[in-house]
Length: 408
Image 1 (cartoon, helix red, strand yellow):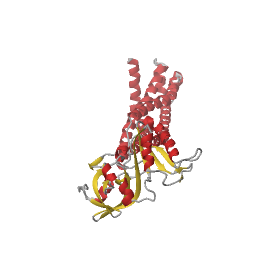
Image 2 (cartoon, rainbow, N blue to C red; image 1 turned 180 degrees about the horizontal axis):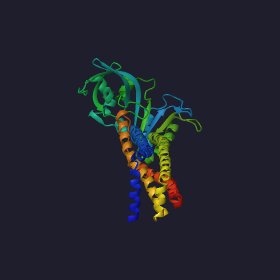
Image 3 (cartoon, helix red, strand yellow; image 1 turned 45 degrees about the horizontal axis):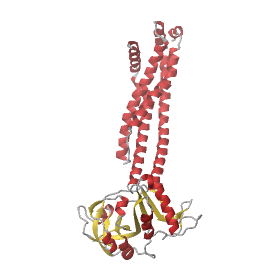
Image 4 (cartoon, rainbow, N blue to C red; image 1 turned 135 degrees about the vertical axis):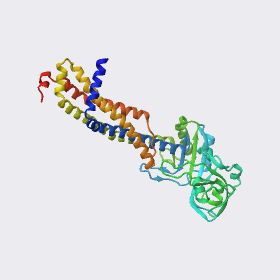
């Protein structure tokens, strides 16, 4: 063991003889490790942000919208193919469904005092918030009696509150006008943020469905809806929910076998999984690009070690002549190469963490540091040093002592 430590000390002393060259040699490894850690942190942060945005829509949700989607993404079919009766039939006849809500949407102008704001009014039933798992930050949500009586009451999203009311002003009890119809504000929704496709979920006014249909939004056919939202009993029940909904709606809409549906069913968990897969592919691509820097750093270590072997040929010859074995020389140069890569890896971790924090602060990008990525990058850096340092070390160990002593 003492011989091993003597070899390690000798290798470290050799590196200290030329500190500048050692630092420049480590630069490639530092950049490589820092790039790997930064890219993984950005990729994980982006993926977590997308998953959070999709989960903000609700858990175990299936959305049904009217019209069929062709292979080219063009929507076709009847614009009024979904009705409230369809939604209630789903509740009644689909055993894997936990709850159902529906919505009728329209862009409207909302006025309060001298302030006005263009937003979206949604006519929804009382079950809407429970299906969407959307809590209130103030007030209450409308109840079944408000729905049955078509009461002019409204619940506002946070964006609408920010645009219509002064800071600190309580909107509960205020009278707003939606398409010139007065509504009493009875509640404020908790902030949800944007969806994965950039839609502001808080820029919304929720009103009872019957109120929207009869007094505000209007309709050519009573009972038609723009969207039905279904929550499954569990995440594992989602495929069963989709099958039951398709079978039921095809039967209710009298669609013959072989003909396309006049509705589209979307599983939000599938959208989340697709987004996750896309993020993984992008992160792997960035990781591959960043790994090139580690390869370049390893080549740099090998080149410098070859130069070091040439410069220290007489020293190697003296050590061999006084009794050093070839494995001692091999170990010394391997330790030098590994030390360069490991110290460079440690410095790269520090630089990577700093770069990740800086990017998150300056660019306001979501980042998520990974202990596994940091450990992996550090270990890979050590492996790079061993791999690229082996050839110079082997070359030094195989020098002929007599030829080495005569080298000028």
